[in-house]
Length: 332
Image 1: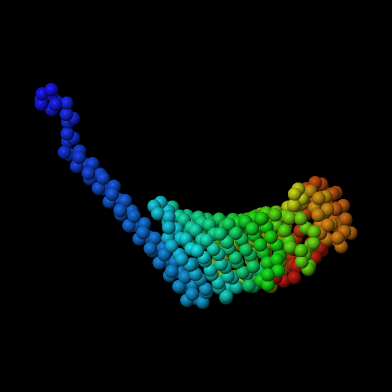
Image 2: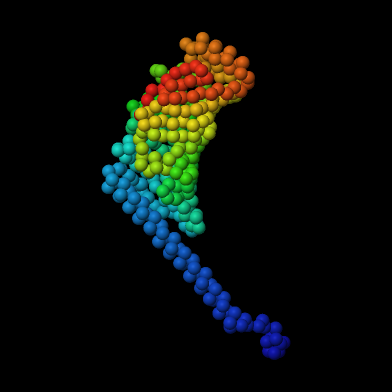
């Protein structure tokens, strides 16, 4: 084979202009990755700095706050804070909390939408004298001003106890949601397999129950921002407040308000499902009330399978139809 044949079989060299464009493209890609990486670590540092400043401001106000071993993680497509432990306490409000294993994350293109996990959370409510523990928490929020557009929390292993340690109640799972609607707040949630702990003054034989609520707190945004510690002046619309055990249940709906003197005003509807089973549960839990429960069973049976009862409350006085059934003392 001659040298001219060999030259004829040789592949043509790419044009110099095309090689240069490929080189510039590769350079642009590498530069973009470098700039993105530098930007991510810059904002990660800003996030850690903002957390440290927030903790410092809380301490300056007299609160206790900490986030141990805080670190921003999630590169390349997410960014969030990880802490071995979290703690916050405000003695003025009477609330303190502590938790372990905080993990949070937000997509780079949507930093205001945050999701996260917490291995365990403990909350002490000093004014109520109650401590609440939960595990395996999942939470999400959409940050906005003055309050987040949405806050959702779900967890398992709920335990409520007195601050002294005496157990009050336990549940297998619970969830809660908060969403501003104008100046009002929508609050919803549920609890599963809630059981009251046997103790002095508590019903000894109540089965586990499920609960759910869906209410609107009037002017709730202002109440949250001012950390109001009193029920007085509160006004709510109860869309759904139910307690069920199997097929039996009680539901409440309607407007509910507390005036400045602590007196309750409300116009409520009480809906009952499977009244026979419900009365049977109450007989076991409150054996001393068997005569009254017998009368209630006769009345409810006459009203059908799913009776609804109107309950009006005026200045604390509860009336069902023409009959006064009790009085609610002024609330704090």
